[in-house]
Image 1 (tube, rainbow, N blue to C red):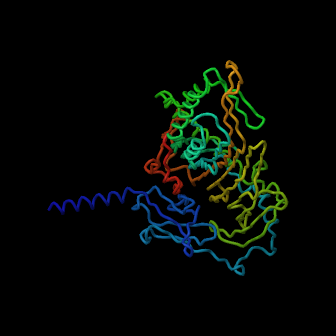
Image 2: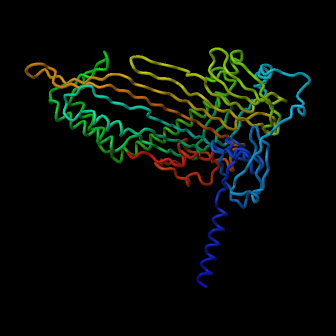
Image 3: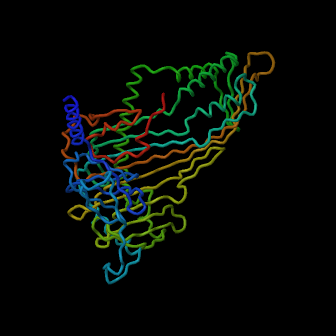
Length: 496
């Protein structure tokens, strides 16, 4: 009897769990078994989610409330599936091959340039969204990598400051670090101006420091105190650039950096992180929407400078139940981007653009310091509403910079109060540092403003917020968001 009761309890537990869980799945290419990113998974009229860059998705509905899914993606046949028929919650899509003989376009074959000229002419007609409300999910990713961090000592008369110490410092520097901001909310407005109302936000914060590095800082401070005279000063030179630093000030500054923060300072730091999230959402979301492909001031200048690009009609496919041109473009002369567009054959609306820079957008190099803006790529995906207007569906933008320092560094201790020469100690070293930073912005705009519009708030900062040092899948439970990729799921902050 006990075994029977136990089995019965387990059965009820599993049934309740199945009822409450969200439905998660993956969309893959039927032939290659590769993930299909940014596919639309529709589970009800005007309700759906989008797959992430690994083809994964989650729907904020118990399985018992879901019956059929409609999955569509550019270059693939739209598929409707019954959830009960799915194996391992994996959905395979078949590539869509179009026989051109079966395609009726017009009695005049248009060139790629003519197609894009018509698309440009009809922007105001196709994309006038007016003043509407939309639910959105926004994710900002910051990825930093240290490619090189070499400190090579040429000469040192300061005891304990040697190449072994410099190698230990280099080894202690974290070679990569990441942090993320995630925001769910509503915005109202058009492509040029939006009001953002945040419902919920999370900050996956990475302090980008290590306890071992703090210990090394303490050790350097102790070495200087033991080997440098109290009334000395340090002359720090890099090439012909130099600065004078008082030894006492140097030690005091290290003590401030290594002092443990108070409760008030920790609370202030948390508030600053929340303000940073609010600032990012209120600045970057309008920026992404306002930098749509027709904007003359946008960095991506394709439609503003059509004559500076070469175009080719690569084929045709179906997207959102419409026949679309597939047009590839590449720079002609000194332009910056290459990519692919999908343009509706009926109204010449642009459904989707994928673009990436082919060369650095900016370069700076002076006196051993270099900076290169080497990444600028993105996606713009639109969907049509019942009135035929194109609405933003998914925007993605990646901006990256590489920074480098290749300079000598000379540290000289001088003291004018001692007998004999003023120079007491000297440290000569070469510094070679190469780092890269990538900022990625993802904006998902849902077809409606959510299950229920939020009640007006007393303050724009009145929303649920948390800072995490480890990814917590429970925080977004009950909400439709873009599924986190493996890097976010495995996120763990470096210990402060």
